[in-house]
Length: 266
Image 1: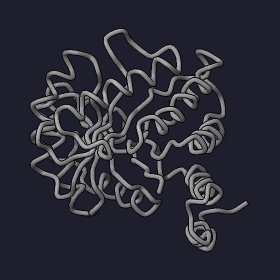
Image 2 (image 1 turned 180 degrees about the horizontal axis):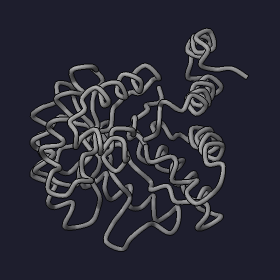
Image 3 (image 1 turned 90 degrees about the vertical axis):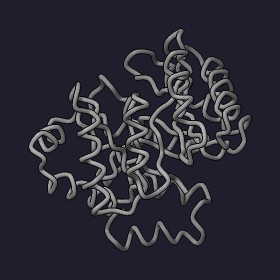
């Protein structure tokens, strides 16, 4: 089934950062409960916006979030020390967002990753910058999956992020990432794919309609997870409907349940 990584607990968002500064636990708890109710599979937790406070902010967030949900968490930080602390606090097998092929970043993460029971978002990013073609994405995916498997990470725990880039920058960015995802899901059997879905619409008007159509097209080529807002009822309706049309919903039960609950309507 498609996995939704709820993106809303992120201190780059003004309301979240204000709640963290003020230690407004009820604001955070209410948002997490809404994400779970709307169908999130994971709750992404990012406390990196306040320089010098990430570790304490992450610890506070993890403590209060786990008071109101049993969903697994996605620990979102580039700092191995913060991740090490966070890993000791979680009660369910977490996801780590994210690891890249950039030499210094990858080498710094190896001691943290070895022996850990966790899922990993693996970015198709290396020291040369953003990928410029589908082949570039595919080759980087193969490289980072190989590197992670070499240190003992199971393939089924790897979520390759092909780095969705805006259509406003290049008209071929949509096709590039769709071609790459289709090849990755074929050539690297057992891995998952995920990424920041809304990147595709950056800089364009009416972003939500772009995101919804793009999600359906990405799911058709094998995309099986996304970092997105589960409170967007329309995109969640697209996700459930696409799963049904793809044949991933026996007897259309999940689709029918969502329709009866009023979550899918014309």
